[in-house]
Length: 344
Image 1 (tube, rainbow, N blue to C red):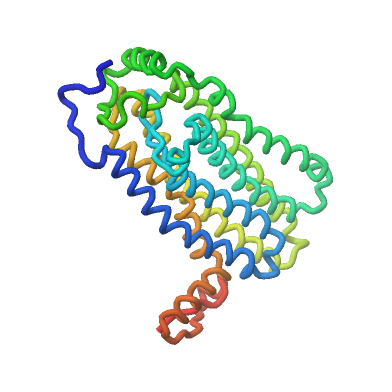
Image 2 (cartoon, helix red, strand yellow):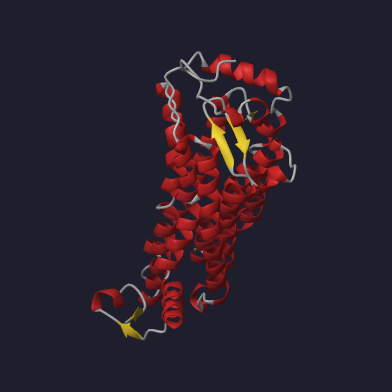
């Protein structure tokens, strides 16, 4: 089997070593931040936000798990478009089979997506307290979403080729119909190290995209109904209540929406590679490093945009550095957020 074209030029950014070091470095930075974020949610969430604490903690838990899986436990080095994987993490060293590692990786990502939907659903339930129809449907919906998250990638897991030598040959032949060459594989990942997840990359790719469309649809529905209810009930609710709801929703949207780019960008890029018939392992590596940084970025956004956590963070920084702190309030900021602690 030909792995390389004479025109291929490899750089350090193509290598598993770079990918492994980058993910581990990111993981060891992210883990302390995740623990600090969990502490803030559990002990620094004000009483006015207590109703959303469980859903926020659930979302934070899954961002932490996905970061842990991608950066330390599995460290999946992906080879596209053949949909091959080389696990570089701790689970591989412990002898855990590659199919199980793959299933853990994909399922954790699905639960991360759905945990974000649960925050929006929880806010919808709180605001539409009188919606008896949804309260009856809520438990079956939650059970259904949980079952779907567990099963969505089970067919991929069950159809992983047992004969890997044959699978590599089939994947090579199929993809040669679309591109002129497979990515040039380094000596250390040839032969047994490269594990083919699926002979047909496109089917698995579209399965993942359908899952994301389901998540997007639910997110838009809950967000839309929440805003519609707030607008409808604005005459009944006090200005303070409306203000608190909007102050909570704005940071939540930012926390979840902005880092989503780090999730979607590499997936979209892989699709473009497939359609336009080109491949670059460097950009694939960088894309999945960005993918694994989602939890880290999301936690940074949470600490930055939720004022109670931001206040506690500033106070912690000030106390650790031994500098004085003051309470600074401007007329514009005061209308939207609580007082800001500023170190001087």
